Length: 433
Ligand code: IMP
Ligand code: MG
Image (cartoon, rainbow, N blue to C red; front, side, top):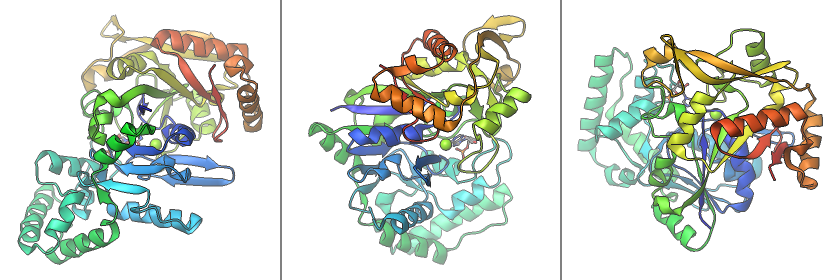
């Protein structure tokens, strides 16, 4: 079986966790390939609500192996606390059994968090992501594979601490790191992870050669991509398809399906323009009904209408083979639905995303209008989804206006929907037939 890539097509938080959790039923490996604990997934399992920032969503499927891949930046303390939470609930410690951390993945240290906490420009999650990637690009980062090598290397620790404290000082931070602190951190990381650090790219390659199914799980979204997103209001990694195989340590020929996840509307956290942002009653409706608060920072997400300019850009970069539409239920009860099909920029109509933040800030959306569909309770939506899947009816069970809305999105983006999410429950997703 080939690998399937799951990517956010907007500014993140499209509902990847829930989709990966569902698809992991047919997978034996789920690997993350970029980002770190700036991501956050909520998985709802009946009464239980699980929140993960590093652990791939496939953890809920016992037979699934999990990889934190080469292209990631990993905070070992956050991973430890997620693993402790998991073993408290389930009694399982997957370290070295079915959870593996790439020897090439970079380590987020307290220094990186101190540096990130100084950010006022981007509205980062403050988890140390950008500074860790900066060290990687500057070729001074610490990788999991280095840990055993530097365990007793006082010279390395001294030089590293000197460099870190000089940066903290220059950046105006009051925080400082110490040689003893760094060396004891390294010792702890070694103890906690030596059984799970490995050549995860090779593991995935071998699994694929044996015919196993691998899911490559993206974090953040296309518009937060360092190259293809709304720079500089982006994250520090390549969130797109091109990096899915690369960041996992396998070649792109292994990948067959690429699923782009998109909400039936759009949201964003942090700074930077979002042309269809709504600061009115409809925006409130989306935020309240959709529970649009960040899993990682608890910040209120900015909400707006579906933006086809954004989606066309995401499609060009990623070549999605299918779209997973999420949170359609949230639109229920709105009389009129709008879809942004182009922007007006300095008196001209444009259909492509501008490359600069200042041009994007001057864009105003050009909308088409569609009829809305009625509000329903979560249990009504869930029952509808269960019936649709059991009877193999697909989205034909949805209200006519909802079907029209989906058909319009498919036509504008030029990619068919493979599933439609209508509620937070694992089973509240309709498989398109
Ligand atoms: P960083 O990734 O913490 O450096 O944050 C950079 C930008 O990406 C900020 O606007 C964050 O709010 C945003 N961001 C990072 N991770 C996520 C995510 O998983 N979902 C949504 N936004 C994110
Ligand atoms: Mg999220």
